[in-house]
Amino acid sequence: MEAERLKRLEAAARQVRYDIVEAIGNIGIGHFGGALSIVEVLTVLYFSQMNASPANAKDPGRDKLVLSKGHAGPALYAVLAQKGYFPRETLFTLNQGGTSLPSHCDRNLTPGIDMTTGSLGQGLSVAIGMALADRMDGRKNRIFAIIGDGESDEGQVWEAAMAASQYGLSNLIAFTDYNKMNIDGLTSEIMNLDDLGAKWRAFNWNVLRTDGHDLEAIDRAIDAARLESDRPTMIILDTIKGKGCSIAEGKLSSHNMAISKEQKEKALGELSAAMGELS
Image 1 (cartoon, rainbow, N blue to C red):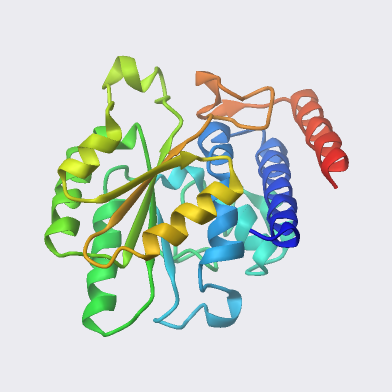
Image 2: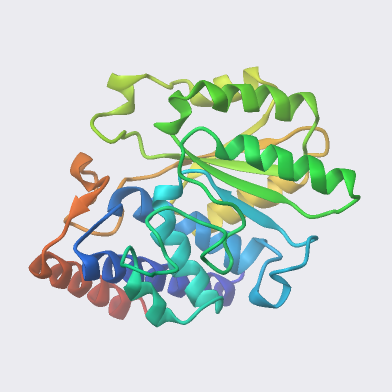
């Protein structure tokens, strides 16, 4: 990746992370952990890989995203605001009465949201339906889906895995946010997923694995996934829950955590300092 392009992605990701903290901190509670762990993949998708913008928001041939772990909506909202789907100021209405930015993604409320999600285990099935429909209509676009590792305990995920393989959905590229934490414990203790890659390969998916906070590595993985012509791809992202925010990073409590005004200011100060060092 050329240096200037990487610099733009890094700047976008830093702003997304800052906006997540500010938006959730504004209301004082929210899904910090799982939002902060997918900042980089969303940044790469919307600022490098996806054919999706406000200009083609109604085009059925655009690329589409299903954020199956819909509680991470604040991360997607921050990206959409930066892309120009709605004003940045809207982020500060998150979860408030009358908002267009509810806790979980809702395509009927939020510009740029392709599918309503949040009932865990169902998003991958929806993405398969979208990929099948687009293929039947002769479209050459891609469907992207992001699922959680805790969500992967749901049986419907594996039913979907079988179906996507059966239908050879090479136009489907999915990601697992493998931050290795559920809402109340480690995935290894609650329902051990390892070897996660072997599981997806057993369902005849093309499987890639990369550092979920490395923008270049994620971009390369998606490029590689595009070369697959016979089956869907699962990209396993090794991530850290609450990444980039000391009050949340690596903590089980970050799933849906309260944040005081003092914590908010501390977190924003840390992020502002990091943004200054890297600018």
